[in-house]
Amino acid sequence: MTIPVECYFVLSALLFFIGVFGFVTRRNLIAMLISVELILNAVDVQFAAVNRLLFPESVEGFFFTIFSIGVSAAESAVAIAIIINVYRNFKGDEVNRIQELKN
Image 1 (cartoon, rainbow, N blue to C red):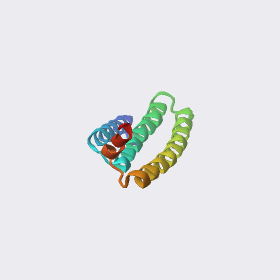
Image 2 (cartoon, one colour):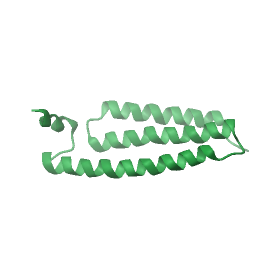
Image 3 (tube, rainbow, N blue to C red):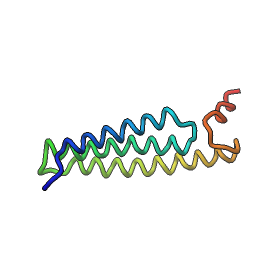
């Protein structure tokens, strides 16, 4: 018994909206990074689901998913390095502290 493709679409939509909600409501940089990762994971699930729906015999959607996961990992590494520098300079990882850069 296989899982219907619609379930993957629902999962992708839930991940996307949870990520957007977390990004908009959180002020902690790490929590915002996790929210962005949730959004990217929603896109990965969507790639795989659309590939399964439209072209069940090919694997191009899965290659896009693997490539996207690699890009997400690199993005996370760079973002964590930036967050560590912000924490060292401002003694916190809140977005409001970064506003001090403008003054």
